[in-house]
Image (cartoon, rainbow, N blue to C red):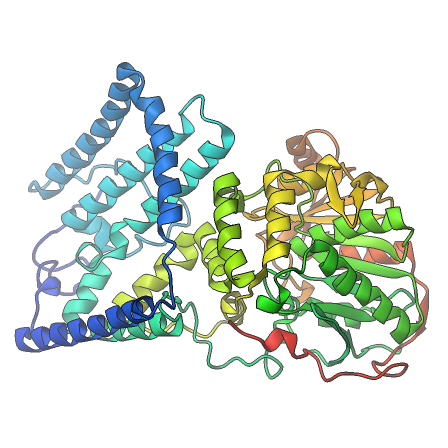
Length: 611
């Protein structure tokens, strides 16, 4: 084991550990601190002004109250038994004593380096700077933080008698608090930030506060955290560029038909129903990543639903409206454009949940135009739903409904914040540090441009989704009411391709697996590598990740995985083979507008409405 110097020259030959944290130009540093305070004042004004005018009403109290209630239930368990509480405190104290002993050993002359009390989890990028290990002060902070956060997480794991929803919420909130208080998030406790601040005499903080003020102003009083440089991107110019035409437009959806890329195409057109929680061009980010373009190249006549970004006019649009004016309107448009009634359909995320409910409704109404259904990371049973379930209980849903009913919609920033919180360690705090403390502009990234392109939720639509799916699980229970019918997934007897992704935190692979058993027909369950986005948007040319196939999705999920076959690369060709086994008849390629008037070029107008 190597000895760790804390004075003199650093191991890399650079300045001593102490010297690199000393201000070299106190006058310039003081001037920059004054400039930083000035910019901080502008940020405070950008936050306060819309509140003083009554344009913004804070709703921070609601989630904070829920977090306090959740932690209170957790505390009740540990404090109900003095012996249990003492054991928990002893574990934490023992961890601190180990950290303290290591720190004492570190500063002792000629001492050998002791093993850390606890190490960061694999993939944790917060503590990569060498000073976290070789500087006794920062090493102490890191280990004390890791001991505390690990202990808090174990309190949740070992709390017996908590109902699963409370445990899920407690685990989520502990993770949020742990991510927020990490020493890597603060200038004086992060060696890299400390060095940069000293080296630039605080100019990084001036730039950071200026960006903070700009981002609060851009959010009209709320922080609109920038995760990328969005300026290079423009929808229709270098994002969502696959050629096509808008061939239909309803109050809630535009229907886009794309130009063919082959001389012959599959007889059955393909209708894609994306989520309205995000915009459809996740499937058409650029030519290299575009599932839409790839499907066209395989011979599909591709139609996509582009949902409206709703406002107060759409407040009463519920699931039936999205089915009638979106999905079924898309089927009507396809029939007019191609003359074909038989269609293959894809639903992604909540778009897949809507498609499943629509198929059950259509089966009861005798509408059999969809001949096969593919679901991308879609839940139809919400027993084991992902971390979004943390935000769903009667009190929270009622609060969301109250907020939505005032405007007719849920602000897009609310959903964007919720999704970012699911991965706050990746999607929030690294950007807080980079932007507002290091004062650096984030890099251009098309995926994060899409992630920031928020959508509103129509009040009736979102309320129906939260209550019938997350809160009451009515779709899989066979108790969902749509258009005067009680719908059952057992009535969906067409072939289903059900794609999950292994690391999905929104639609967990287990949840998708369990949902498969509710369909009344044959189900091909496939599990892709990676998560909710990368597991789906994985073009074959990238040669990334893998996917698993196995027998019918029945029995124990872990046993299915154990016996599944691992295939390298993208699942896209596997899906194409599955589609062609259902119907591979080909016909001459169809061009948009041949049989009907078009309404403009793809990607249309609805997708360009921003919040």
